[in-house]
Amino acid sequence: MYPDSDEEDDWTKYADTGYTSTYDPWADMVPATEIEEEELDEEFEEFDNSDFRSRDIPRCPAPVGIEHTIRIGTCNHCLGRVAGVRIAGDPIDLVGERVRSKALERDADLKVNDDIDCCPFCEDLFLELDLIVNRIIAAIDGVEFSKAQLGIHFAKDHVAAEEVLRSTIAATGSRPLKATLSDAVQFAVSEKIPGIGWVKERPEVMLLLDTLTLGVNADVRSLFLYGRYRKLAGGIPQTRWPCRACRGREGGCESCNGTGQQYPHSIQSLVCEPMVESIGATSDAFHGMGREDIDVRCLGTGRPFVAELKSPLCRTVDFEKLTKIINKAAKKQIEIQGLRASNRAEVSRIKETKAEKSYTIRFTCESTFSDEEIITRIESLAGQVLEQKTPQRVAHRRADKVRKRKVISIERILVEGNEVEFDVRCESGTYVKELVHSDEGRTNPSVAGLLETDCEVIWLDVKDIHAD
Ligand SMILES: [Zn+2]
Ligand SMILES: [Zn+2]
Image (cartoon, rainbow, N blue to C red; front, side, top):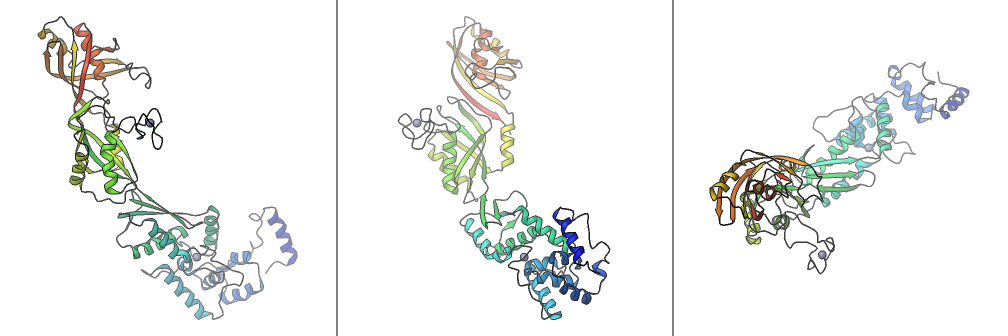
């Protein structure tokens, strides 16, 4: 029934040249599952190549399969998942323990083979459960969260070897190692920190376990807050702007008074710094629905933004209190309102929304037309589509092309001596200063063109952003 020594030599030659899959010395054998268990036990004693043996041992849950699985050093966790026994509601290691003691009842001499030093399925990972749990707890110490996701990284060869072993001797449908380890870790962490919701997407904390080093990395996901800012003073950029002289290096330079910043404040710093401090974040990012020039104020209900606070220790925010802290510290340079919880998806929405905007603009002009004629000519711009070549002031950072933008409405035109002021509502992306002074004819039509004279902008305010 078994190959004699010559045949075995022959097989080895094929094995060395990689022909094992095409040459099967066992091909004519009766399937092992049909052989009486006791008979098999005896026979395997005589045959000591474990690689061969496993081929003919029935898979779990056959008792012989379970005994073999125990002999090769399978731990209780892995025995519980591969034995093909289900005991509802019990932890998997307890299931394994029962399977083992049942097998020992059948055969008191059953023991792990002498040369085995760890569980062939998990490489004793389950023995490290306490260590893993302690490392996870240390990694999330002091962090407020309710939803966590666990990711486990295995070495590729471990995954492959475990799969081969499982497909050879484990019961059909046995739970994979990764899922079982994941369950065990989650269960053990939840025992120590109750109330964690384990999720498959959008966690607040992403835990990553590396099974090779048993290192744990906790990635605390950003907290997003939506609000609207009003910018009441000029001279404030929207985002932090590194000093041109020192490029924002640590400690700054003489020209930036050691701040590393081109301007002492930005909307970002005024809004986010109190947030970072109050929720214990490490840093921030600022996402505005468009932006205004440094010298332009932003009034009305303000410009929508989403502040992103990275690695926050705290997620419960008292919006009213935080708004007050920010507004007080900003000393009337800016003001925020409508603060509420947000998410990453809203950042895209904010970035992509093409909101119409209303502006108030004031300029000087030396037009010889009567006040009525000036008003009539400016009013004629309402409903027109402007063709705007990229303004010279931004040409260095934008491609030179022609933009078409519609003027929705023009209201409240005031002529006061050689100064004119009006409100204009236009499509997102309109160059409003250019609409007035024409940028040497690069914007058409324009106020300057219609009034047949040079116009010089005194100031421009964003009056409102028609976002939502
Ligand atoms: Zn194991
Ligand atoms: Zn500097």
